[in-house]
Image 1 (cartoon, chains in turn orange, red):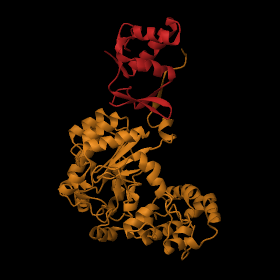
Image 2 (image 1 turned 90 degrees about the vertical axis):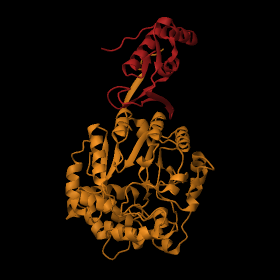
Image 3 (image 1 turned 45 degrees about the horizontal axis):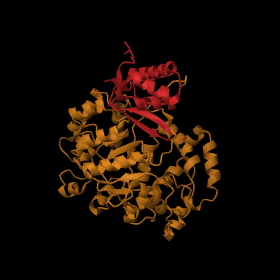
Length: 397
Length: 100
């Protein structure tokens, strides 16, 4: 019949199938629950773990499995299980095994407090094929629990982390920079470096998103926790060379004005299923006009029809058209319909905080002068070209 | 010691892997740790491998599989036998098929 090898072996992380292929639906995000066993001060989503009303409305095991099956039919290769705290779901192990048996790789985002010996054994026996992401809120009980506001959560998290280490289940850690833990960066990074699967320093969230369901009380707290743009920039530029190098790569590819086009991101090419069966174009955008009810339709219809229509939306807000539409920092700036929704309840209102952050970032390497507004700059292409071609040492000094 | 493949034995697709067609490529993905070998890998089968794989249903021995394919492709039994034994051996080594 033939003489070549019948079986070609490819390492999971290197297989071109997983990287270069463009499936109809590459990855699906699923918020298994909005409930969480922590009560983190900065969190944009958490509901109490014992919120019966929320729990009752959550998708059932079968409903989630049906969505996963449909995703596989749409060539999906991986699923991200997040929340809230996804391990709160009593059926988590069942959902996980089902996803894996559908051949899906599973990204798991967790606080690790609910990792048990049984779950660790399962994760060892049936590997997720992606590194688990664990968010760590502090290196000491006092700092950790000042963030989570749950007594005992520090011990529980470290118990879970140690189970992952003992079973050699690949994971990475990331942080959330908040007043109780912001002085622990060095200690955190030194510890993170000991984790075998951390091939680069941990990432941090710090310019915290407002509440995903626009809870006013939570928003007041989150706003108080946000660093100023200057404070944030100081953290971002701790490793100046790496920062400048990253900025150069980014600028050359992604920064340009987007005009009145609202969606210039990847929103709607995949999406996130919330805990109640609404398919969002991304993890953050929950505007009623932008979510699709999977209890009444299919993933396929959402991706083929609903989201493409949504992506045609244009900005109408005069302030947006005068600023964001003309701003060459688009791409660097986190201004997007999702953030506009969370901040203002509309899709096209400029978010001043994000604008200030982007301007601070652009001023650092000299893309903007003090007092300049990026939407008033005409020679942005030339400025980007000069920056990208500049000698890194002179930029940093 | 690597397991030896025999024409008189029935082999079946392992329950610890899942097979899937993606972007025109037929891939086999291990589910459990250790299945598919000691490291994290996926396997793709060429078109001939796929044909033989579909026959490893756990119901008939390799001799019968060889006879079927020989008739289907009007190819000499010796040639088919070499391909079937070759593929089954590779799959068995990687624990992608098991003996019934």
